[in-house]
Amino acid sequence: MIRNLADYVTLGRTGLRVSPLCLGTMTFGTEWGWGADEKVSRVLFDRYVDAGGNFIDTADGYTAGRSEEMVGTFVADRRLRDRVVIATKFTFSGEEGNPNAGGNGRKNIHRALEGSLRRLKTDYVDLYWLHAWDTITPVEEVLSTLDGLVRQGKIRHFGFSDTPAWYLARAQTIAEKDGKERLAALQLEYSLVERNIEREHIPAAQELGIAVCPWSPLAGGFLSGKYRRAGETGKGEGRLETMKGSGHPVFERFTERNWRILDALHDVARRTGKTPSQVALNWVATRPGVTSTIIGATNPAQLDDNLAAIGFTIPDELRERLDDAGAPEPVHPYIFFADAMQARIRGGVAVRRWMPSPVSGAPILPVREISVAAPARRETGDVRTMRRETG
Image (cartoon, rainbow, N blue to C red; front, side):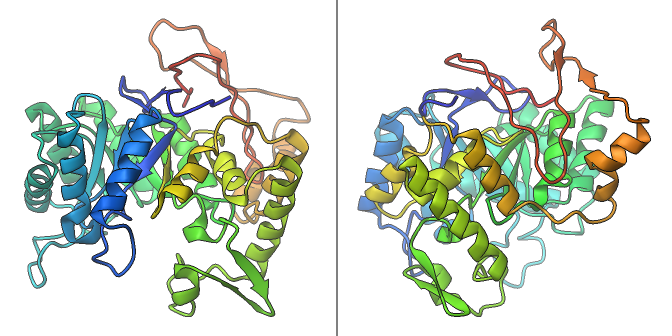
């Protein structure tokens, strides 16, 4: 069981240790019309670090660069550079009308990184994320550029966010074949209402030794407990209310399916004596393949509630209700991987796949089978710093 922020875990098959909850700083800054000002952001940063957290996530595009600037200032003021793990991102354009000031080409990666290093007041980044697939740049160019930056010491590790599973699998395979630096992590949307990464991304990550760092585990606040069904739609205070009707899937949460999931969440929260947000975060943080879950807050009360989401276990029968409420629809070709079809493939004989541990010289461990509808729960050892098996 994860007990607190200081139950550090290695980031995939690397030696980098990170907290099970990562402080997302997209809320640092008010340039987007919402978020926290510098005074409140500093309180959030200090409270997270003082609780044992060491993993900070930002991006060059967050609040027009102010998020990176504040993170850099907060880290420098407390002289925490060697203690904290700083992650930032590239991809989104830094200049309108300039085709090479955005995307994942070599020219933009170098431009973006130099800007991030300047704003973060550091000479290296611990984890550098490709923010989103640009649909254009060959994976070979992305990989060779990031591998070169690792060799130069400007970044320590890199990962992909919001990319197709085939793209990351191709990158990891090329890296393994050519002896290049491999992907350490994936950052993807994952919550009780958004579970599509269970089809391809999580199995790929487990097979290839890549950590999974979910973003938006509360579905933009939908699972926080502040929204309620109102007729055929919903109501509540927050961005989902103001952005309703925008057409953007990140904000369009008021659906019949999601209301059913929210009903189940509220029932489990009541039965466990926890808040809905704590149960929703706990569910994500303890899913198979998940390494560190990204949380965000605009005030200390929200952060305190989020930090209390680890340290308890959802009873099996209640977890199963949550699992079933939002299970991905069995569609082609995933129906062939479900238990009934696999039983036909195996002639009714039970078979478990075994794989060696990613740790050289470590004992071989059994790997549970994972069905599409309800992935098996991960079991972890009771150690202060643990490696969660990704193979």
